[in-house]
Length: 480
Ligand code: SF4
Ligand code: SF4
Image 1: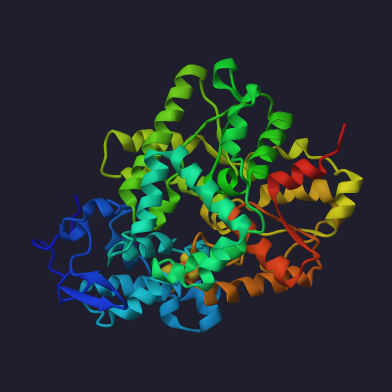
Image 2 (image 1 turned 180 degrees about the vertical axis):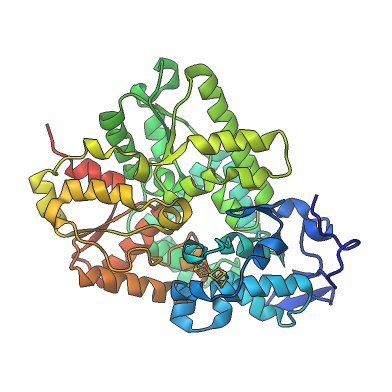
């Protein structure tokens, strides 16, 4: 229970706004914010934030910001717009003032919250390690209607309760894409009509869609079956990006794991819950997390300890933070913490001593190789060094550092579809940096980056391609 509540705290108001609700371009800010103020929506919010300075409620986490402004030197949305409200400092101050009831212009607040990339570049350079992305997400969850879009809710519910039906839907959508129907729908304004204008952009971001998902392929691999395995060296967790969009990434990860780390198993997991977490469905995110934790515990009881390897930096970083979903839950908190400790990103797990100078023909095709730091790898998990060691061993002199390698690509989950203009500006800077080193191959560790940078390169710089880390290792490792 929080130490702050409306009855005992002396700070006045403790509401987003003194008025009951304020219209914000079709959305509304609730008068009551979260569990700090005892409103009925507590399950939509985190109980506490686990910050580097300890467990904090939302107000205290935002109040850790001393307004030094150092985050403005790295925040993409501030650097591109020059607007204080679109910086880490601005966003933290907004949340604090809204809680105190001092912010009057709630439409500015909605804009500040919705335009944050959640990249956490600000937290990386912040001396107080203020968790701005989590603070922003808590602010978004206080927006009336956030996470209540009918189609988004239906998608999350189906993924949670009927994953095979979700896969069937997706295949139908992919078949429609192959026929060109989505483009027709976009032209006729159907996406606007159903309240998801971003879909028109989304369908243009992927050049080919799979009709066989990674989980279907991996379930059929006899070497990956838990029943046949005595002591697996690893379990592969298939994030939704590789599973539903880039199955070749999952297959490459499993292939390099088998070669470098011996036998392992397929976890046959559920979605990690990140999409639900980031788009206002926190209870659904908790349910995804519980199911993955249970699956891990079952496998651990049968096979002993093993690391859980994921190949999308966003999902790996989110699963490492599962404990924060259960801060008020004595049963699930330690179980979430134990699961999180077992999670490893392939970017950190692949052993550098297994990397050798790569296959000559594959490297010739790759040209100059560079590495883009996915936000949730470098800022979310602190992974920077390990993939570079491996890539330098594989590519040798062909490897070149990318200027501003940890500048966000603008993908950021659905950001590319919801904040189209800003996302394009963020991506442009990434593409200019890629062109400046004349890269032929841009290695990435996140599937959102793979889609976003891949689409950007196809449009603006087609002589280069974006490749997932696992695929690059698999393609270029010496063939025996
Ligand atoms: S978030 Fe951190 S870096 Fe940014 S102004 Fe606040 S204390 Fe300074
Ligand atoms: S998370 Fe990224 S976009 Fe959001 S305030 Fe921090 S640096 Fe800026």
